[in-house]
Amino acid sequence: SVCLALALLGIGLEFAQGTLTTTRQMDAADALANSLGVLAGLATSLAPWRDALLRHEVAKIPMTQAARLACLETALQHPIKLVVNALGTPPRDMVDHVHSLGIKVGSLVGKVEHALRQKEAGVDMIVAQGAEAGGHTGTISSMILWPQVVDAVAPIPVAAAGGIGRGRQMAAALALGAEGIWCGSIWLGTKQSDLIPEMKERLYEAKAEEAVQSRSRTGKPARLLKSKLTEAWEQPGAP
Image 1 (tube, one colour):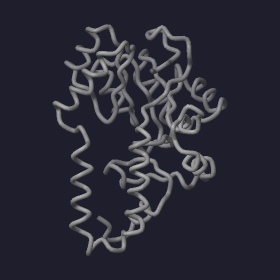
Image 2: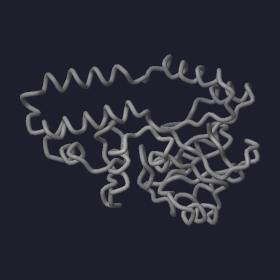
Image 3: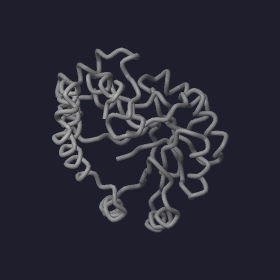
């Protein structure tokens, strides 16, 4: 469930949990990354195998209009207070439908232009996600993006995301005008996370410069820990 210090939600907390992929997906991605990293030099001879793997993975992604609507309707069957959209502006009719059920709508953005489009679509809150964030990200740093979005969409409340791991960063977000914060990666290290201990330890040991942006996971810029896969992706002639 999502929790924010926003009067529109009526919940007295100042942080929210961002969307996380499931552990099974993470495990599969990690295994795939290791496999592709080792086999990257054999790309030519393994082209048929690679294409078959890609088709298999793509088939599991709900990218059709019908699948998207089905996912939303499943969510709306539960007692939720907020639906948050990412990677694009939600259609106005979809926003109106969610509003008709008494549910608020939020959206993640990485640029002021994106935030203004979300405002026009009628969303109730904006999550301004800086480039420091995990998962899909833009290129504008949090310290620059947060106040820009706050000013651009006022009086719509803004939650800050991207690089928040300690109270000092939360305080900085509030000082820059955010109404609350939105966290994702930090929850992977909690006791409730079902990541295996080895994966958690890898996160704890990683240095700041190891958190790189790459298109190797989904084709869109995403922040990942540097691996054989991300290095192979940047090589000339990589698929």
